[in-house]
Amino acid sequence: MTPSVRLEPWSPDDLDLLRRLNAPEMTGHLGGPETDEQVEARHARYLKLGEAGSGGMFRVAHDGVAVGSVGYWEREWRGETVYETGWGILPEFQGRGLAAAAAGAVVGLARAEGRHAHLHAYPSAGNAPSNAVCRRAGFTLLGEVEFEYPPGHLMRCNDWRADLTA
Image (cartoon, rainbow, N blue to C red; front, top):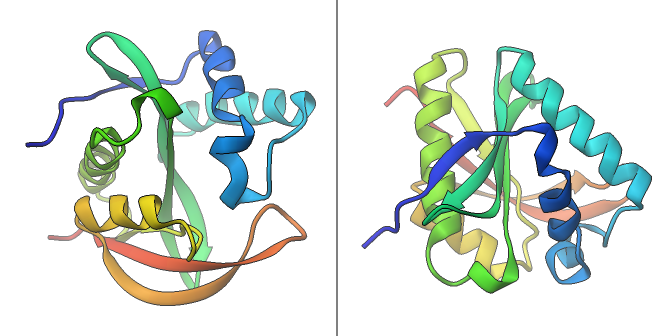
């Protein structure tokens, strides 16, 4: 059974949540924690993403408690404008299906916008839990790719795609 989550628009009050999501155990597959200045800049980008009108960043709430974040945004990928998604669930709430529920909800939001045919996720090839989230949320594995994240650092990722036209 899929747990229920609420996606709430990212707000100025979510900076502390973003700092908690920046912990070493949360960022090991992403190049490690960011500096506080980088986290503050990310927070500002998340706030603007919601204002841009295409995509958005959200606090994931479960039983009235903020448990993580999820979002989607535009990017160019292989000659096409697509959406990309990413998520993080705080360690004390992991293993309950909350990330898959949040990722599935984001697929629905991106589909409802009707702007792009596909939503991609690029978890590290070695990040079994995030790859399982993609599978449970209905994404299709397209294969391994080399991806630059963070900037200047190449990593091996799996390219997962959700069809937004279905």
